Image (cartoon, rainbow, N blue to C red; front, side, top):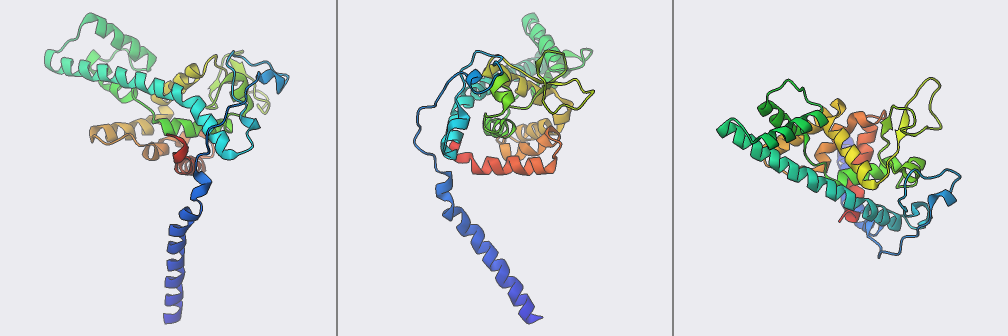
Length: 272
């Protein structure tokens, strides 16, 4: 028994040592290469399918080095993500100010009340709620999705920008739509199904649609609850914590969450 016990302890020690050494051995793997010019050309030259947008995309599939492809992908998509998060942050500030006014004055200016009603409609709230309740609920929905989480999920869903849906329809997030002609028909769509993969005319539009989906869809209620709890405790809205709220995003379930979590960890150096 003593021999077995010592053997187990020894093995455990080796595993712990390897856990410490492994990242040091692999650190070069995650260094960012010096930026190089991004090759571009119309996507219609790659396939016979005409793009549904006028955006000239980087030719992500042409990069020979993974590090260069990752840097190019994040650099291309990040400005739209940051801009949308900034817009949401400013709008949330207004909501917090209106909430404070309602607390002490019980009313807000008519122009602000109209804005609340428009937001309540956009963010799918019950129109019969009081304006104070609408503002309270909007504060939980009108909020950022951390930039690293958005970028990593976009990389996962679009195969680093090389998927047909990303190239032809600027859909980096695998978003579906349900009106005929709203996007691209999946080649693997089962008989009888009518959904399409949404197409967008700009990267900004695609990112805004993704953010709105996360902030309104009942499937991501847990993500919004985690974010609200972090806000209440004045803690950072951390990607590694919010990622668990994306469980319904993929049929792969927990495997999907583990994969996104690993991508967050491995690609941190590229998202600067």
